[in-house]
Length: 214
Image (tube, rainbow, N blue to C red; front, side, top):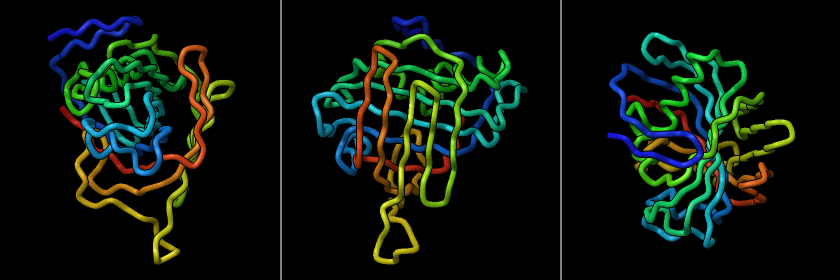
Protein backbone atom coordinates (compact mmCIF):
# COMPACT_ATOMS: atom_id res chain seq x y z
CA UNK A 1 0.00 0.00 0.00
CA UNK A 2 1.37 3.43 -0.89
CA UNK A 3 -0.08 6.82 -0.10
CA UNK A 4 1.64 9.82 -1.65
CA UNK A 5 1.75 13.02 0.36
CA UNK A 6 2.98 16.43 -0.71
CA UNK A 7 6.00 17.69 1.21
CA UNK A 8 8.25 14.79 0.30
CA UNK A 9 7.07 12.00 2.65
CA UNK A 10 5.34 8.96 1.21
CA UNK A 11 3.62 6.54 3.57
CA UNK A 12 4.56 3.13 2.14
CA UNK A 13 3.94 -0.04 4.13
CA UNK A 14 7.26 -1.83 4.58
CA UNK A 15 7.77 -5.29 6.11
CA UNK A 16 9.95 -4.65 9.13
CA UNK A 17 10.63 -5.78 12.68
CA UNK A 18 10.32 -2.93 15.15
CA UNK A 19 9.12 -1.83 18.60
CA UNK A 20 9.39 1.26 20.78
CA UNK A 21 8.63 2.31 24.36
CA UNK A 22 8.85 5.72 25.96
CA UNK A 23 7.20 9.01 26.90
CA UNK A 24 4.55 10.79 24.82
CA UNK A 25 3.09 14.19 25.73
CA UNK A 26 0.92 16.66 23.86
CA UNK A 27 -0.72 20.06 23.81
CA UNK A 28 -3.30 21.48 21.40
CA UNK A 29 -5.56 24.53 21.24
CA UNK A 30 -8.68 22.70 22.50
CA UNK A 31 -10.11 23.29 25.92
CA UNK A 32 -9.41 20.36 28.25
CA UNK A 33 -10.04 17.59 27.34
CA UNK A 34 -9.64 17.69 23.54
CA UNK A 35 -12.78 16.01 22.09
CA UNK A 36 -10.70 14.65 19.22
CA UNK A 37 -8.48 12.87 21.72
CA UNK A 38 -11.48 10.90 22.97
CA UNK A 39 -12.53 10.11 19.39
CA UNK A 40 -11.67 11.68 16.03
CA UNK A 41 -15.38 11.95 15.18
CA UNK A 42 -15.95 14.48 17.99
CA UNK A 43 -15.69 18.15 16.89
CA UNK A 44 -12.68 19.90 18.36
CA UNK A 45 -13.04 23.24 20.15
CA UNK A 46 -12.02 25.40 17.18
CA UNK A 47 -12.38 25.23 13.41
CA UNK A 48 -8.72 24.27 13.18
CA UNK A 49 -7.07 22.01 15.77
CA UNK A 50 -3.33 22.37 15.97
CA UNK A 51 -0.75 21.15 18.42
CA UNK A 52 2.18 18.81 18.95
CA UNK A 53 3.14 15.36 20.14
CA UNK A 54 6.55 15.19 21.83
CA UNK A 55 8.22 11.79 21.96
CA UNK A 56 11.13 10.39 23.92
CA UNK A 57 12.03 6.85 22.91
CA UNK A 58 13.47 5.25 26.02
CA UNK A 59 13.94 1.90 24.27
CA UNK A 60 13.30 0.78 20.73
CA UNK A 61 14.60 -0.92 17.63
CA UNK A 62 13.97 -1.03 13.89
CA UNK A 63 15.53 -3.95 12.04
CA UNK A 64 18.43 -4.14 14.50
CA UNK A 65 18.99 -0.38 14.72
CA UNK A 66 18.58 0.82 18.30
CA UNK A 67 16.53 3.99 18.89
CA UNK A 68 17.19 4.34 22.64
CA UNK A 69 17.26 7.94 23.89
CA UNK A 70 16.04 9.57 20.68
CA UNK A 71 13.59 12.49 20.77
CA UNK A 72 11.09 13.61 18.15
CA UNK A 73 8.18 16.04 17.78
CA UNK A 74 5.19 15.76 15.46
CA UNK A 75 3.48 19.11 14.82
CA UNK A 76 0.04 18.92 13.26
CA UNK A 77 -2.86 20.98 11.95
CA UNK A 78 -6.26 19.37 11.33
CA UNK A 79 -9.87 20.32 10.62
CA UNK A 80 -12.35 20.61 13.49
CA UNK A 81 -13.58 17.05 12.90
CA UNK A 82 -10.30 15.17 12.72
CA UNK A 83 -11.75 12.07 11.11
CA UNK A 84 -12.48 14.17 8.00
CA UNK A 85 -8.76 14.02 7.19
CA UNK A 86 -6.80 16.71 5.41
CA UNK A 87 -4.21 17.01 8.19
CA UNK A 88 -0.90 18.76 7.72
CA UNK A 89 2.05 17.40 9.68
CA UNK A 90 5.69 18.25 10.30
CA UNK A 91 8.13 15.72 11.75
CA UNK A 92 11.11 16.98 13.75
CA UNK A 93 13.77 14.42 14.72
CA UNK A 94 16.76 14.84 17.03
CA UNK A 95 19.93 15.87 15.24
CA UNK A 96 21.74 13.42 17.52
CA UNK A 97 20.28 10.52 15.51
CA UNK A 98 22.44 8.73 12.96
CA UNK A 99 21.13 8.47 9.40
CA UNK A 100 19.84 4.93 10.02
CA UNK A 101 18.22 5.93 13.33
CA UNK A 102 16.55 8.93 11.73
CA UNK A 103 15.24 6.81 8.87
CA UNK A 104 13.87 4.22 11.30
CA UNK A 105 12.14 6.74 13.54
CA UNK A 106 10.74 8.61 10.55
CA UNK A 107 9.36 5.35 9.17
CA UNK A 108 7.56 4.66 12.47
CA UNK A 109 6.10 8.14 12.86
CA UNK A 110 4.91 8.45 9.26
CA UNK A 111 3.20 5.07 9.53
CA UNK A 112 5.13 3.21 6.86
CA UNK A 113 5.99 0.37 9.29
CA UNK A 114 2.40 -0.20 10.38
CA UNK A 115 1.21 0.12 13.96
CA UNK A 116 -0.63 3.06 15.54
CA UNK A 117 1.01 5.76 13.43
CA UNK A 118 -0.16 4.06 10.25
CA UNK A 119 -3.72 4.68 11.45
CA UNK A 120 -3.01 8.37 12.06
CA UNK A 121 -1.16 8.63 8.77
CA UNK A 122 -4.35 7.85 6.85
CA UNK A 123 -5.67 11.28 7.84
CA UNK A 124 -2.59 13.23 6.72
CA UNK A 125 -2.91 15.04 3.41
CA UNK A 126 0.35 17.01 3.52
CA UNK A 127 3.65 16.01 5.07
CA UNK A 128 6.05 18.91 5.37
CA UNK A 129 9.74 17.98 4.88
CA UNK A 130 11.22 16.24 7.92
CA UNK A 131 13.81 18.32 9.78
CA UNK A 132 16.76 17.33 12.01
CA UNK A 133 16.92 19.70 14.99
CA UNK A 134 18.28 19.89 18.52
CA UNK A 135 15.41 18.82 20.80
CA UNK A 136 15.46 19.38 24.55
CA UNK A 137 12.92 17.48 26.66
CA UNK A 138 12.43 17.83 30.42
CA UNK A 139 10.64 14.92 32.08
CA UNK A 140 9.52 15.83 35.62
CA UNK A 141 6.95 13.89 37.68
CA UNK A 142 4.23 16.56 37.37
CA UNK A 143 5.26 18.36 34.19
CA UNK A 144 6.89 17.87 30.79
CA UNK A 145 8.62 20.42 28.57
CA UNK A 146 10.01 20.47 25.06
CA UNK A 147 12.19 23.13 23.45
CA UNK A 148 13.64 23.60 19.98
CA UNK A 149 15.58 26.86 19.90
CA UNK A 150 13.97 29.45 17.64
CA UNK A 151 11.08 27.14 16.75
CA UNK A 152 9.18 25.52 19.63
CA UNK A 153 8.50 26.09 23.32
CA UNK A 154 5.96 23.64 24.76
CA UNK A 155 5.00 22.59 28.28
CA UNK A 156 2.28 20.61 30.02
CA UNK A 157 1.54 20.49 33.76
CA UNK A 158 -0.65 17.92 35.49
CA UNK A 159 -4.09 18.88 36.77
CA UNK A 160 -4.19 17.98 40.46
CA UNK A 161 -7.08 16.01 41.93
CA UNK A 162 -8.69 15.82 45.36
CA UNK A 163 -5.47 14.26 46.59
CA UNK A 164 -3.25 17.24 45.82
CA UNK A 165 -0.17 15.07 45.65
CA UNK A 166 -1.59 13.06 42.74
CA UNK A 167 -2.56 14.08 39.20
CA UNK A 168 -5.94 13.53 37.55
CA UNK A 169 -5.80 10.57 35.20
CA UNK A 170 -7.67 8.67 32.54
CA UNK A 171 -7.83 4.91 33.06
CA UNK A 172 -8.70 2.37 30.40
CA UNK A 173 -9.18 5.02 27.70
CA UNK A 174 -8.58 3.91 24.13
CA UNK A 175 -6.22 5.95 21.98
CA UNK A 176 -4.10 4.84 19.04
CA UNK A 177 -0.76 6.24 20.20
CA UNK A 178 -1.17 6.66 23.98
CA UNK A 179 -1.15 4.10 26.77
CA UNK A 180 -4.60 3.45 28.37
CA UNK A 181 -3.32 5.21 31.55
CA UNK A 182 -2.92 8.94 30.85
CA UNK A 183 -2.22 11.98 32.99
CA UNK A 184 -4.51 14.93 32.20
CA UNK A 185 -2.78 18.29 32.01
CA UNK A 186 -2.97 21.88 30.86
CA UNK A 187 -0.40 23.15 28.43
CA UNK A 188 1.02 26.03 26.47
CA UNK A 189 2.83 26.18 23.16
CA UNK A 190 4.68 28.70 21.04
CA UNK A 191 5.51 27.40 17.58
CA UNK A 192 6.07 29.09 14.21
CA UNK A 193 7.87 27.64 11.21
CA UNK A 194 6.23 30.03 8.74
CA UNK A 195 3.61 27.45 7.72
CA UNK A 196 2.08 26.26 10.98
CA UNK A 197 1.66 28.77 13.81
CA UNK A 198 0.55 27.67 17.29
CA UNK A 199 -0.19 29.90 20.27
CA UNK A 200 -1.84 28.20 23.24
CA UNK A 201 -2.12 28.83 26.96
CA UNK A 202 -4.02 26.77 29.54
CA UNK A 203 -5.37 24.37 26.93
CA UNK A 204 -5.62 20.59 26.54
CA UNK A 205 -2.57 18.61 27.52
CA UNK A 206 -1.73 15.10 28.67
CA UNK A 207 0.97 12.47 28.73
CA UNK A 208 1.46 8.71 28.93
CA UNK A 209 4.12 6.02 28.60
CA UNK A 210 3.67 4.39 25.21
CA UNK A 211 4.36 0.94 23.84
CA UNK A 212 4.27 0.70 20.04
CA UNK A 213 4.66 -2.11 17.56
CA UNK A 214 3.36 -3.23 14.17
